[in-house]
Image 1 (cartoon, rainbow, N blue to C red):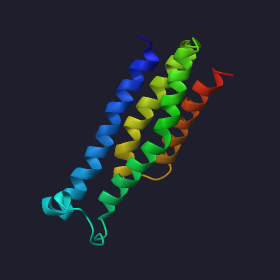
Image 2 (image 1 turned 120 degrees about the vertical axis):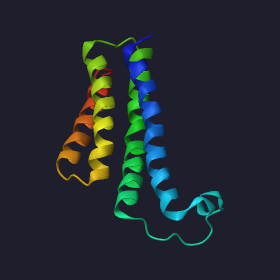
Image 3 (image 1 turned 120 degrees about the horizontal axis):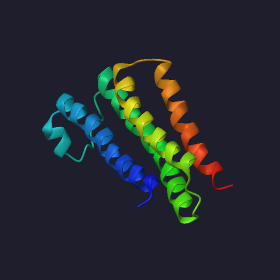
Length: 129
């Protein structure tokens, strides 16, 4: 199997880490009854940590579709090479690093890591052109 597809599989699992990190903290704050409810009542504001984890999760799901599409297109088009392998690996590891940076509220470095993940996606896309 292409390394890019392996990194895609790992990135899918990482997406669940983002979901579970945010949902665990929010459920801890709001309780199991809230978690099991239909959530029709207005939400109580989240703590800074829970809010950061929810925003990190949203950010992951803003970039992941582009990464997934680029990886699949690279493999299907037979454009896989050392650059695309590295780009897929860089995207994954940047997103691994991004979550704790965002959770800790680290400015600038978090944004730099985000830029690295976006550049990795562009590298995959440029391999198709």
